[in-house]
Structure formats: structure tokens, C-alpha cells
Amino acid sequence: MQPTNHYHFVTHWQLNAQAEEIFRILDEPSALPRWWPAVYLDLRILEPGDTNGLGKVVELYTKGWLPYTLKWKFRSTEKVFPNTLALEAFGDLTGQGRWTIEKKDDQQCRVTYDWKISADKPILRHLSFLMKPIFAANHHWAMRKGLESIQLELLRRRATSDEELKKIPAPPPPTFPHNVLDNRVF
Picture 1 (spheres, one colour):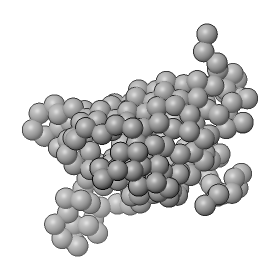
Picture 2 (cartoon, rainbow, N blue to C red; picture 1 turned 120 degrees about the vertical axis):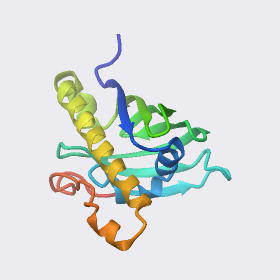
Picture 3 (cartoon, rainbow, N blue to C red; picture 1 turned 180 degrees about the vertical axis):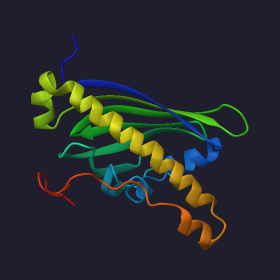
């Protein structure tokens, strides 16, 4: 029997985009706070990895809809352009994540994120037995904001003029004061 702080989420996004476009966005972690600010509050690159970024270590400060934050890191463990990005997470979250990008036709891709983690932040670890459905709903909210945000990022990257850029709304911001319960470590 798995401990109650273990989670397995599979998220699917349908995007009007080429696999290469999606891969490039997801493979640029330093841009996450700009285009997905509802979840990615801050980050820093700790290790650059090899010439392709494999082995790159990124420290993250993240949140979802609920008023708590997470401090965790990931290491890039696999990259197959333009279809696969995988990572190993450690810190408040421990486990593996895998982005798979599949071309459906000339206009659309199906993006799948398979996220197998343990919630190791003390409040999550100790309350998972009781709050697991709420913590899962928090993850699903974050991924819905990710879909909304990546769609806007695709529009921004495709814009051909300043006028077009001005018409694209900002991505959804974080909820609640994110610095009330936790202080940033970086």
C-alpha cells in the first residue's frame, strides 16, 4: 500500500501548435515565472547541465490555488526533441515528471504530463491522509492555469507586431498572498 503522501497525476492538453513550439516553451525553465506566473513564482538555475541542458538543475518556488508554497528542485533527466522532456524532482516534492508531446495533425498536438510524486513538505506529508482530494484539486487547478498560460505564450511568440502583442492578455496571476505562509529562500 502506498503512503498517503504519494500522488500520480496525468494531465492532457490539446494545443493548436507544432510539437517543436511546445517543446521549446517547456524546455525553457527560466521563462516559467513570466508565462505561468500563477504557479511559478521564482526560480534559479543551479547547474546548467550539458550543452543540451540535460542534467540541468533548477530551484523553484511554486504554488497553486491554496495558500501554501513549495520549494523544490528538478534535474532534467531526458530530452528527445520535439517529443519528450523528463525530470527528477526533489525537495518539498520528490519524484518524476514526464512531458510527452504528440502530433495529432498539422495543426494540433496532444501534450501529456505524467507526474509521480511524494509530497514531502511537512504540512502536506502530515495532512495528505485527510486532505488528499483537496491537494489533488490544487494540482488540477495549477495545470488548468498552465494550459491557459501556454496558449497565451504561443500567441505571444507568434505575434508579428507590437499591436498584436498588446491585444494578448497577461497570463493568470498567483492567487492569495504567496508570501504570507512562507518566505522565499532565494
